Image (cartoon, rainbow, N blue to C red):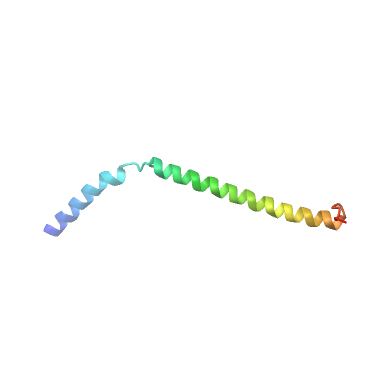
Length: 69
């Protein structure tokens, strides 16, 4: 009987906490923003690097790049 009352109290105290809406702190929002921007920059640099390399090889294959004398 005493164990059941203890379990009942635990569920009663946990119910308001679980019903409470979780809020993002300004630190969390700032960190997510910084990480997202860094991820976008890294992806953009990878794309630029990949297209530059393929662009050079295509231009060399077509003979569009002048070779230094």
